[in-house]
Length: 200
Picture 1 (cartoon, rainbow, N blue to C red):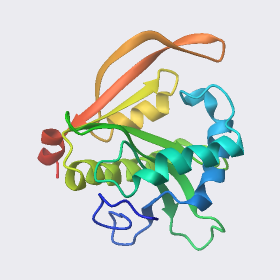
Picture 2 (picture 1 turned 135 degrees about the vertical axis):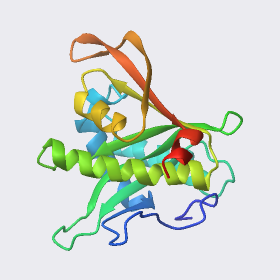
Picture 3 (picture 1 turned 45 degrees about the vertical axis):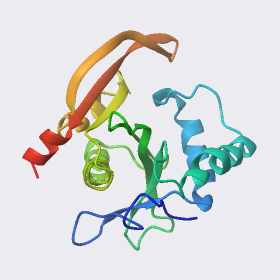
């Protein structure tokens, strides 16, 4: 199954030009995702490289198998930039993980591809577009009440974009993660449905 049973549409976009679109992750995407994750472990809870064998096993047994369920524990999506100048226009992936249907909450995940030339404007536009779309998935499609994030404190730009997109600072766990040979705080942000409704 390519699409998630619990989602009403096969893709989501929020702008009339359909510049950015989210699709459910598919088999052809998983090697790309593995490469991105292995090269960006410093910003993830992942500490060791993922093998191609384990990546195939994980997606077959924990991701794709849930697509036919009414209440999957995670919904993983790839983000495409609909620009003809791109040979491969997949620029990021993310979604909702650790979904709790009793509490109606989920954690937002997001990871950009490796090849972009980093600048704040580029990252902010694409991450902001992703957040706008994932709020529709979480609040309007899944009827959740709260979306939250965990970010390591050295990701200043990532945190700034979250706060510019209605995610409110909720607190920190001091020296909660060990990355780059030192301890960092974990910073938590969230948005609740009531706040989302007030602004849309």
